[in-house]
Image 1 (cartoon, rainbow, N blue to C red):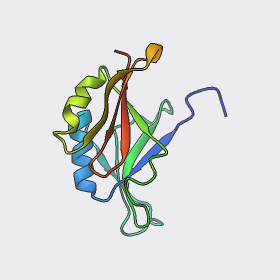
Image 2 (cartoon, rainbow, N blue to C red):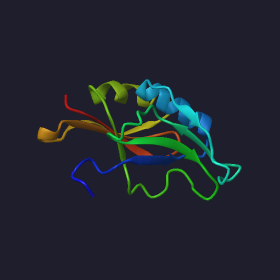
Image 3 (cartoon, rainbow, N blue to C red):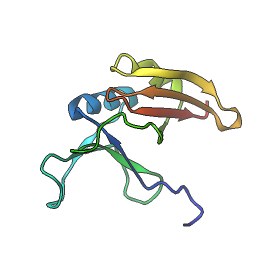
Length: 130
């Protein structure tokens, strides 16, 4: 592996795609778009992608609804979304149907973070330098 940010893709599993899509669009102020499914995908699989550039820098990802993959399980992986000031997104979380787990907190020289649960029970983070 090259010495760079190693994450190239992430998936957040959801039970209710419309509810989850609305939540992330409201909190992050972004537009998610449906990804076409390959012919090999199950008929009930649906993916809605976060905005991305296909230049290979950083990580892109999608909300995924798929049989056999329940939302909110485990919590062993947390996706952190970048922000100018994570307090901005924190203020939108509960109004959008989520729950703040940990309010904006300093992580020293690495900036600040917020931890929250989305409408599907998935924990996610928001990170900012201020």
